Image (tube, rainbow, N blue to C red; front, top):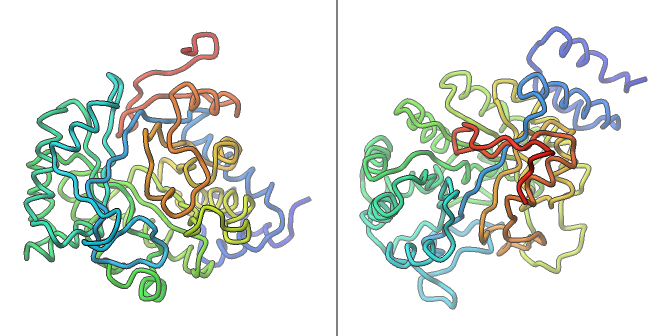
Length: 367
């Protein structure tokens, strides 16, 4: 027996019909979470079989100086405040050289909107890293950062992307999206790219041949309708460009690591949002369970709720932890394989573009 309110959605799923905003609201409000999970799991199995992906990557944060003052951010600093920093390309290379392995596939680079350094700093950083590590994919700068660069350089989005691609950029991360609603952005991130500007950057990147990522930062002031509008806007752009590789729902973190559980998203909301993402975003190949924000055990459970990716090794995550995340700042390859196998899935070590590097079988799992 399923929730009677879900029966029309069950018929749509049976007919492979696209779900509407109203359908999404029904899914969010239904108490029958296990039926929703079953649908999401089946949708994922049709897309990806039992394969679950992870990557050996390294997070880099060139600067925490930022002109924007987003309500949810614990990472940013004013230029002269305690803890403010801006690393030179040489300092980043020294940091990387101490931590990189022969299997590191990707640098995930995000940071502040630092208005005290010139536009050339951001280009030169990418160029220096690509020159030193030509085999590593550079995933750098959110759409909000790209919009900021265009502003300080008085250049078009396309010109900024062209400069970065020439320097060695391979793909864009999905950050800076938060919630694609102007009501939300005016309250939570008024100094950053608007909804249309964020989408325009990814549209331009896709047209220039880049495959990119998309996120949603949920769990603060947004309504359920706004979460679903966010997904639908991404879905519409994906219909247009087919340029997104993965959708990453990000549970918002409180500003204090000691914040009560009432200040954090619930396990039920996290799992429901992953499942609904899989059902709403029918044109996305992958939905990511981001272990940094929801924890390793819930990430493992999310693999039965429609997730097909659990991110990567990270090495040293800072942004979510500066905002109160309780998880580890890094995991090993062996940890990630163990999590995936524990969910009765097949671990696949991948590159940034979901090309398999190694498929792990239980009998041959690395130690």
